[in-house]
Image 1: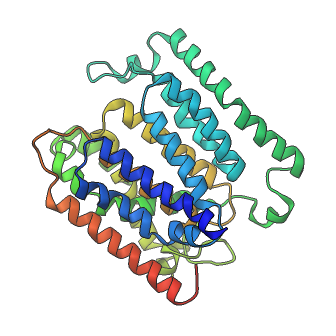
Image 2: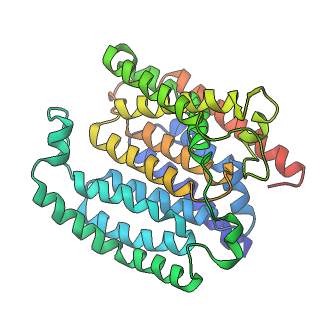
Length: 348
């Protein structure tokens, strides 16, 4: 059974590597983009023990790949993958959002058109595509409704302790984006346009300010009873706080919002819109859990940055800079050290 369960972990890493390789990445870059997922504690432990996490992340990855490509047949297949995802992890129904965004946008977003024209021009074809996509996703939605009726609520009886939501989850998502985004940052220095453009740099600054202000709303100190423990929360618990706010989490949340916006401004417009919708949908759905655990977030953030790195528009003769590859190596070593230490101490 454990060997069978490990198939999902291998497939997750393999699909990531296969996709980025098809996007034109070198073999070395392909390995380094997939390696963080392979050594992350929260994907490795699911592959080594009987946990459903990697099966769900595999489906999430598949849906994101489908959403980033404007092929209508793939959208319909996305409904099948979404059904499999909901049967494994019900709260991952959020993945319908990037699929719907992909169907609405179509292939009509171009550099020469304004954002308003790209999203609102020719509405009827967009509506038809969206309705077709929703029809494909209807089995997944029906499965979720069946679970709700079976449980007489949105969580199974055994999981009622996890219901109620956690306002600190968006802060954790942004904080992890701040950590991992920095180690993927060599890619953005490579393309660099977002940092040389005053208007875009200003937007990044606005996003960073928003991240800091958002992190100032909920309590962000280490608190096991409030579901704020494991991962970054353990580090935050050892560092200075101001009132009920961790200075580390506030700073990393601002940094994460800056990186997410910088990547969105660097990616092709269509990719950026799907990418941002995925971040918003995932964060909203994850906030419904009472436990703001890194286990629920880390694989998603790694998947998102790996996909974004592979979607950058590349000059055929231009090599990836050493800074980008060095960041990936450092990230993998950091995650490997965490995994090795936790497993050595008998914890997951």
